[in-house]
Amino acid sequence: MTRYLISFNDGDMRFPREDLPAVAAASHAVVRQAQKAGVWIFGGGVDSHDVSIVGTDGSVDDTQIPRHIGGFSIIEVDSHAEALQWAAKIAASCRCAQEVRAIMDDPEV
Image (cartoon, rainbow, N blue to C red; front, side):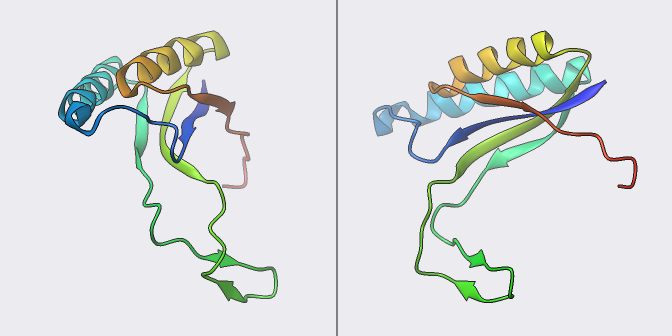
């Protein structure tokens, strides 16, 4: 089994504010479906207001705000094709395209 990161960029969710309750309900329904299927590991939205960049020298820069992940899901499934199926459900529920990336296995961690 492989773990996959399914994510979208901050700002990609574009819908009328009044649709937020429906989008949240649809997204939560997909999460419950993934939990019931036993593929859900973890996920959530990412705060776009409290961003810090830590350099290789340990310095902290709070002034740059790069484009970043707005939300993510981590699932564990048998194949890339199955990950794409879950990403399609997530994309439909939150009304924005999703990136799908395999998380490389590292036996040390």
